[in-house]
Image (cartoon, rainbow, N blue to C red; front, top):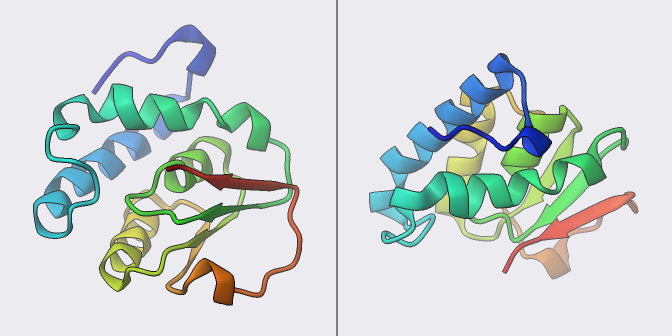
Length: 132
């Protein structure tokens, strides 16, 4: 866990959900390589805080799409922090399974599509995220 900067302050409940997500990530990571093994020690700074920077841009929107969601950054984090429903697109079936479990554990309002981005047919949304 990390103390979040004042500009990225979240409620106690949101903090607990983020902690549950990180614990799940740490559990699954050795099996399906969600993040680099060298990044796991700095997952809060390198991944969670980086993703939380998008929360103010998504907050208040009707929904968002996260393309190539991988380990859930930024999609799961943004959904947890804002409560805005998101559609996460991830073609790797193992990573999609992780994302579905993360949604269940954290109660994040996300739908996971285990498809290639170019094969997905979705209506336009106000916010699209992707992280390389």
